[in-house]
Length: 53
Image (cartoon, rainbow, N blue to C red):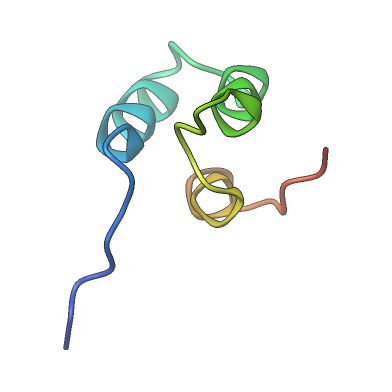
């Protein structure tokens, strides 16, 4: 089984979100930022909710 490749910010985002230091708005900002820090799929993987712009 191959491991899914994530963006460089993914591990930090997971850690901070799970610790309660970052909320969904922060993660959404990372998706919208240029260059993009998180993908829409990663947002959903972290929050369990689909990303909506």
